[in-house]
Length: 147
Image (cartoon, rainbow, N blue to C red):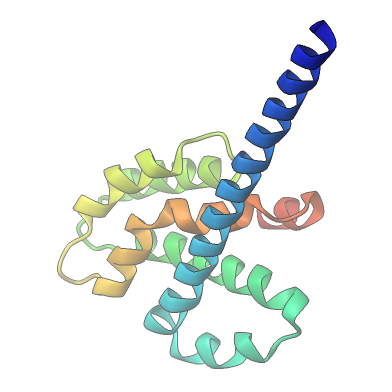
C-alpha cells in the first residue's frame, strides 16, 4: 500500500511539474507574440530588418531592441526631471538583471509618460513584464549579453 501511495505521490508531483512547464511555455509564447506585435509599432526600420535574421537570432535581437527602446523612452520623456530619469534607468537595469519586479517598474513609470510619448511606447513600457518574460527565457550567455 505504501508503494502505491509513493507512486501516486510521484505521479502527482510529475503532473504538477508538467502543468507548470506548460503554463510557463504559454506565458513565453504570449510574450513572444506581444514582442512581434509591438516591434513594428515602435520601429519602422528595425521592424523590417529583424524578421530577416536567422530564426535563432531573431527573438534575441528583437528583445534587445525593445529593451533599448524602453530605456530610450525613459530618456526621451520631457516631463521627467533628470534625477527621476536616472532612478528609472537604475530600476530598469535591475529589472533586466532580474533583481527588480518588472510589473512594479511598469506600474510606476507608465503613468508618468506624457502626451509627447507615442502610444506604442507607452504600451511597450506598460508591457515591460512581457518583454522581460522573453528575456528570462534566454540562455545564460544571451541574458548576460543583455544585462
